[in-house]
Image (cartoon, rainbow, N blue to C red):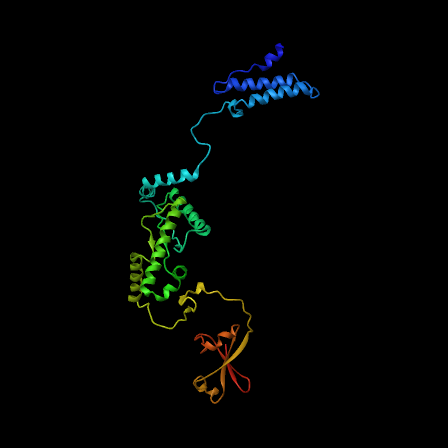
Length: 331
């Protein structure tokens, strides 16, 4: 019996406020094992286990962690990011953290990330979020590397994506509206999602000059576009000419080349003879009175209706091949 008591005595743990109850529970369990040496004695084993279960049901918590001597800390085990992150971002904004970073890096070598702006035609998605986060990595890493790395966010507020969204919202009402009113509706739509995307990007902890972004619909931005065009004009770089413009019959608007997608089509490659329309003798007197032509090869015969002439290189060497009925000028 003395050996049994020596096994049951345990040193007190000063950090365990429920120590006496837990030690009593462990002693009961050891007693259950000591008084039930084999599983064949079902009565005593059952009786002792019932006493242990009754003690567990008495409300004594079984917390094994409290039996360890662990350090105490106020750092929470649970992050609670949905609640804590907005508070952290609000604190950063109150202390104007981005402006203080700019002030701390004033005078250092400048590194500017030219960010292609997203369309302000809806909430951000995984693509825009990933794009902005990766660029934020670059800006912050450059700042930490000793550069003055500002970031000016912007939005593209013109183009077909916004027009299509506004058309869907207006429906047939657009047909009865003044074109200026439709443009105002597009501007209001773009501003709505510009503000929404700005809040969402800030929620992703992306640093930038969010209180002074640029947008292609702002007069300040359009002013620079007009000034740049004036500079081109003054340098005589602006001219009037012919250029094919893609036009969407359904949306009744011009399309950029990047917005046009072609279906796969197989065409035959052909040789085409272009007859000379001027006097062949002007090229060489030997050609006087003969039918002169040149030959081209194309893999897009469906473009031939718009083909109007063949050009020759002034520094290339050409020969005249007499085939009997025709004389062909080829390189």
